[in-house]
Length: 223
Image (cartoon, rainbow, N blue to C red):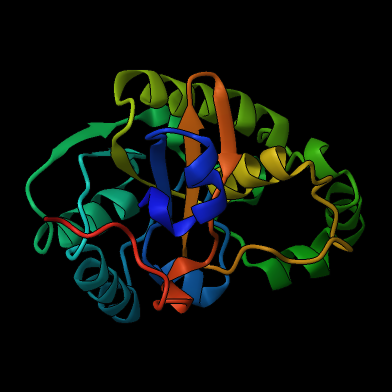
């Protein structure tokens, strides 16, 4: 995987590669409903998405999978494994989606209609965005980042697939990119894409983003 980012590959010898992938689309995703810690199964479209991803990933070597233990991620990983070589899996609750507290199960349109001012205030809070009864984006980062550093330590120079949630992926990438998590910032992450992080020792850097839409770029193939 690390050869995708040629500039960093020449600077860092055999980095640990962490490929971040969100779960497939769920029924609640299609309804525009906030999931957070609650769950819903993958939709037919989501299942098709994951099957396509698995065919792409089956061409490349993955040494270990680290994943959220929520049901929609477990379903995604099970579908991926049908096309991947059998590798060890770590189900880690620290990679669960951000808790949205009282807003879980509600649609975005409902929130805009009934709690529009509060929703807008939270959006303007950036990293301090915290739904009522939920957790902030800073807290999400504080629990997710140690998982990544531990993986770098345990799997030096290996290629790891991290299957989790949009909130986790954004927190990790936005932290490394020095972003403020504000709506006026330019979008750098596309939904349901593959994004790479490179780790070497105590250093963690952003690699190529949105890989599935740029398939001409290739992860290092298996021999």
